[in-house]
Amino acid sequence: MAEVASLKVSVWRGGEQGHFARFDVPARENQTVLDVVTHIQRELDPSLAYRFACRVGMCGSCAMTVNGRARWTCRTHVRKVVDADGALELRPLANLPVIRDLAADLAPFFDKWSRAHGTFQPKDARDGAVPDDFAVVPPASKQRREADAGIECIGCAVCYASCDVVAWNGDYLGPAALNRAWTLVNDVRDGGRGERLDAVAGDAGCHSCHSTQSCTERCPKNLDPSAAIAGLKRVLFWDTLLGRR
Amino acid sequence: MSASERHGETPAAGRPRSATTRAQTHLWVAQRVTAMVLAIAVVVHLVMIVMAVRGGLSAAEIIARTRGNEAWLAFYVVFALAAGVHGAIGLRNIAAEAVGLRGRGADLAWVAAGLVTAGFGIRAAIGLYA
Ligand code: HEM
Ligand code: SF4
Ligand code: SF4
Ligand code: FES
Image (cartoon, rainbow over all chains, first blue to last red):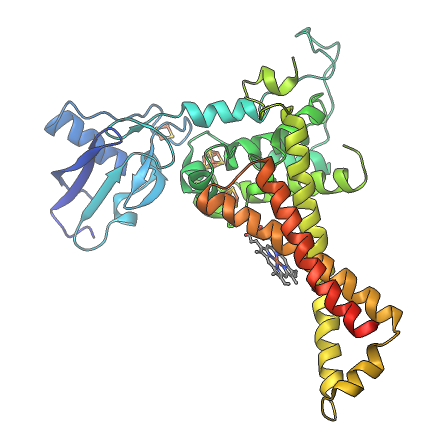
């Protein structure tokens, strides 16, 4: 693609209702999608709203819909997503309210993390006291490995925007919140397991997931929320059959 | 105040949220268990069909095999129950996602529809048994 002199960029302007604005942006050898958006905002139209912070794939704030697919824009090279004609279409993330232009409102996404009991509840120190000693959690233990597998989530909502069940069922907690819950279910220091499993069960929780794995396919951190959800289903299946809940 | 209420949810009218999610979980478990039963039952059923048609198919031959055969009846009762319940819960999920049909009333109606469907199958099996 490096041959085209300029990229033809269509950028969503407005809120839920809006239109695409067209910009020509100089193509460069090394250029991320976020570079393109920043160029537009700095050089062409300062009123463009978008969001980023770290620019190195850590903060999770820059995700958008790039040519129809949710991606983290700061780590997405233009040449990977643009074909010979240099066309780039940018929209805010799907399945979330639009604040303006390319900025989606992540409040519902994070509200669901708390609904899924996504916060650590220390067993030893419920009232926030500091435990007497460090907890020893052997890195090779099965539960530690399950928790480690999902812990690097940056909260970018790429998975959430890619999940059909979220689109069909507004109450569905979604892959990231359920992935987070699974890391905590496997945290041996955590004391909130029972309530958390209640919170992630049923139609708004893991039982609505169809294991289609769009979340896993699209997660920029290569996490596997689909497998985490399968883990929650497995635990709830046996707990239910054996009358443990 | 229950834990779920603390987290800002609205419990379904008149029922605590935990009871609702528990019922939904039970439906899910029922669908998976019946799927396991079906996976085996469909194979047995196919084998039975192949065996039945060997050397021609006649009503007299079938009746001779099925009449008074308790094992045969028991198998088809279980098969019909599993198929009815499994299919109804599956259709419930599709209806919820496709047309937004949700709620406890709808769930009870689906379970009833599943049991009625199973009833037809069981009635047919009893017809061949008795
Ligand atoms: C009488 C035959 C069957 C009927 C009418 C039937 C019907 C259905 C329906 C309508 C669904 C809902 C789809 C969905 O929720 O996505 C479903 C789901 C499912 N069925 Fe069956 N099924 C039958 C046999 C089987 C068999 C033999 C198996 C096992 C090998 C099976 C395994 C499953 C599973 C695992 C699901 C869940 C899929 C999901 O939720 O995404 N079914 N079935
Ligand atoms: S696997 Fe489940 S959570 Fe992931 S995209 Fe598919 S339905 Fe959504
Ligand atoms: S699971 Fe992956 S895609 Fe989903 S929010 Fe976390 S890092 Fe982003
Ligand atoms: S700007 Fe921080 S992840 Fe992209």
